[in-house]
Image 1 (cartoon, one colour):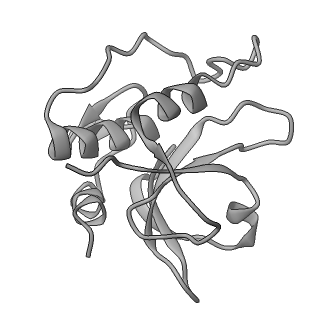
Image 2 (cartoon, helix red, strand yellow):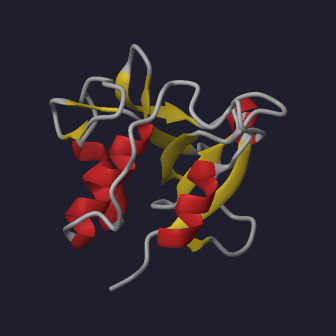
Length: 142
């Protein structure tokens, strides 16, 4: 199992708290990625501004996508690989603003994400979720 998946699984059960990134205390989907980052590398690469639930939507800016490209490596190929970070567009025409980590690939793909009212969970990754993926990234090695 990859170190990314192992760390993400440790966060399962952490409650959903908007803008938070505290293990077992609370996090949102970005907070989960931030927590895994800190486990792998230490300090986060940049300070985050406060953000609302509808952040970036009024301006139509792909803020999260640009940040992911600054700090993560784009995944190569079309294959899901455990440990990859997934970026989702939740509605057609909306900005991409949900993140998860692939935990299983192949015939029964799954991902770990922080979901409103559910906290950090490991969920199946069926076609309706797959169709929402707009980008895949990998944590840098070393």
